[in-house]
Image (cartoon, rainbow, N blue to C red):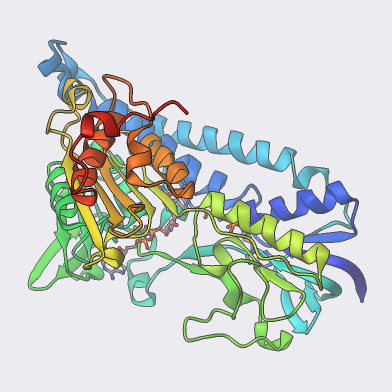
Length: 473
Ligand SMILES: Cc1cc2nc3c(=O)[nH]c(=O)nc-3n(C[C@H](O)[C@H](O)[C@H](O)COP(=O)(O)OP(=O)(O)OC[C@H]3O[C@@H](n4cnc5c(N)ncnc54)[C@H](O)[C@@H]3O)c2cc1C
Ligand SMILES: NC(=O)c1ccc[n+]([C@@H]2O[C@H](COP(=O)([O-])OP(=O)(O)OC[C@H]3O[C@@H](n4cnc5c(N)ncnc54)[C@H](O)[C@@H]3O)[C@@H](O)[C@H]2O)c1
């Protein structure tokens, strides 16, 4: 049996963030990594998906050249094998960079290759070796949800783990699940010339909850690919042609060449045998843990990143790795950390951004909301041909502070950051309106929405000309 002070399970963003702190402190640790190196983000997640979207969006622009007076755009072609090859080259560059700066520098004692599982309260087993660790960080990520019944279609069933490995793309793909992954990759595939059928069992897409934005988004995406909402699909091989997949949607059958399952991701926590550590799980298979400390019960065991399923996105995985390692080091002293304002961006076009609380969770007597369409006098959006979207802001009537925002607009990623940063400062709507807004920029749409909100929140305020200025103290 090997004894160590710290064991980290998983060399993803979360685990590596935790490890870098232990390295700085010169602590005694092991990093246990099962599966491929280089992190989910760089290998099969954020980065290859953005590389595909980038190529797809460039190619798609050809459809709009004529209206700008630029000729022969329709003569452009896409070389799909080259597009896919470039994605893999970029992926290798990103994963190579991650490895060089993290696991490549570890000694044979520090890095253990293999899948860990608990065999006792503080004991892990990897490849038959027992590791006794005083403090343990579980950062073993998540994997795509794939229904067992869909396996009958064999290699025609893809997830985000497979799509970037393809050397070419077929004519027709069904993208099932129009959350973030389905929307980003579904639109990219459509823009690269694939005939895409998008299927989502809820009556929304990309996580939007505000009805006007959902309607706008469905209308926009439907121009590029077929969108079926409110229906769960059944998948099998076409009995008459085993080369084809048959998707059953109610009484409709759609035939495609491949299926991209983007139905969500589930935690890998189930491969750790938590029961052997004396840790129970809830109905979703998750152990009890504190989102402000990352600690599981009162144990010297911490859970961070996608593994805990709380906010499965990259910057949160990094933050949770930090919280987990700070508390692992200070254990039994445990510090609670405030969570940052929730921020999510889907890199579709237009983008979707969700900041703070969700609209659906806030609607009620105490909430005021405004939805401002970009076509309504945002000059920059109109010039760019990007005036299809809208901004929805919602605020608490009493405190006059924003609760959150949902955006469906071009380049929402930037405005979303401004909104998240300001939301975290807990400013009132009047304070926001005293910030500078340049012209002509998309941010002026935020200014317009804030003005509409302010008029309802401050009915007593008669002089808005002055209210947007701060008196010199
Ligand atoms: C297609 C896609 C696009 C995405 N795009 C974005 C984006 O644009 N922006 C964003 O913020 N987020 C995005 N994400 C989410 C982001 O990639 C994840 O939230 C983040 O990578 C999670 O990091 P992690 O450290 O928790 O897990 P991971 O990076 O998955 O690391 C966990 C590691 O643990 C290993 N492991 C599992 N079980 C064991 C075990 N028992 N023993 C040892 N090792 C084990 C796994 O093999 C894995 O290598 C995307 C995800 C996907 C799939
Ligand atoms: N830009 C980003 O930040 C980004 C991009 C990609 C992924 N991610 C991360 O990856 C995670 C997983 O992404 P995802 O898109 O797979 O999950 P998701 O939870 O966002 O969306 C999954 C969708 O599939 C639908 N669905 C489930 N089963 C279905 C069925 N049988 N038929 C039809 N629809 C079905 C769900 O209703 C849901 O809308 C996200 O939660 C996010 O944290 C982030």
